[in-house]
Amino acid sequence: MRNWLALSALVIALDLYTKHLIQGAFMYGDSLTINSYFDLVRYHNEGAAFSFLAKAGGWQKWFFSIISMVAIVVMVYLIKKHRVEKLFCCGLALVIGGAAGNLYDRFTLGYVVDFLSVHYQNHYWPAFNVADSAICLGVGLLLLDSFKLDSIKKQK
Image (cartoon, rainbow, N blue to C red; front, side, top):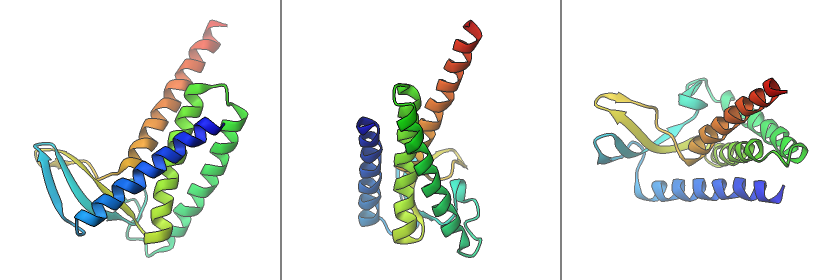
């Protein structure tokens, strides 16, 4: 259990450190082109994924914060209950770290700092951060684990 929570803590530390670097180097809306498909930017996301409900008037900060806290508690319980399932626990640990990193921003800043921008020509993916990346990777591992479990069940 300790190792999985250490992975979550590593994600949180890396997320907060990179956001700190961006906040120190960029003003809101600034952009630095790295190559033809990647920019560093500084945007503030007041909503959820892809700025969902960003302009909802403020209630969404508390709504998403409560959902994040409940989800973190449930995922910690699931890690404790399934601690021998490495892929499952690794996925949960990454999601916990990402959720906690973004939750910290919501509580301290009122928004989440996003700074990674991927694009092709004039087609832009919404900006994201290390926490978002960890959440996506964690969900991917959870999906992979679910397929693994399905194949084991079919073999029996």
